[in-house]
Amino acid sequence: MAQLPNLSREFGSAQVLIRFCLRMSILVIFAAFGGLGFGRSLGALLWMSILVSAVIGAFKREPPFGGVLNYWDEAVAYAAAFSLVSVLNHTVPA
Image (cartoon, rainbow, N blue to C red):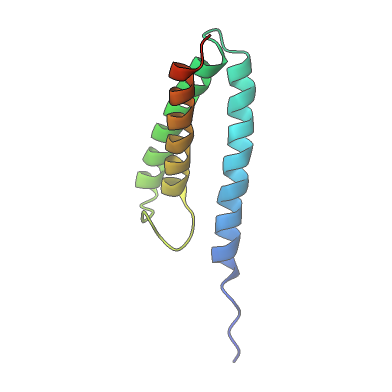
């Protein structure tokens, strides 16, 4: 019998990318209405997103650096965005 390609792996990575983009859009919208200013609000929201993604990845026992994107990769992407936002917050005058 012919084997079907592993579509669940491809769909899993695409699902994580879509989830990340959707969540980033929501975070940017919420940060725009934050009382601390956009940069500081976005930094706080990204920090919480890092923690939530790491906790969910640990609870689901997903392997970090696996062949398919998962919550750990999402946490790393949020950490990179947080680093960028924190550097811009300190270099760009208010």
